[in-house]
Image (cartoon, rainbow, N blue to C red; front, side, top):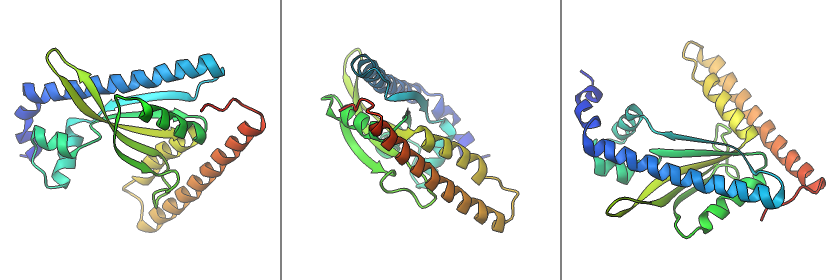
Length: 215
């Protein structure tokens, strides 16, 4: 029997389900902040910096295997202290400039705490992946307490998101020889560079056409 099956009872326990509820509440708080910002910018600048918002709670299996990979125990304390992306939100924008504007605006809010920042736009991963990642803490207000919960926020342009989606589908084909996988990796890296060039050109075009700059 897999160890994952052995902890099935823990996954159905009230404390675990309660913790996941807290993460869902935190996710709604952050999502609402972005939707409010998008509405405000639409009103004052006549354009929306946010193309779409996607939210997710990490699956039980993913949480378990991430802890196992790090040789950490499957406990609620271990989850909260070591896994920072249980609650995740992805914000898709048209332009790279909007990513930094939205991130900066979010972090100015007095009920947001920055835990970690990784800029894979200015410093792409070796495989070509680009995105801005923030780990933030946001308070949720319960019946008898205020609790700070961590949420991962990923910012991407449309081009970055398209590349990441297709990369995931193409890279993980198990039935190809290593030589072909190496070729695919190089092709994906080349495509990532093309996407970055596209984002740069579109950003310049926006500025040339005097599109309103949101600050």
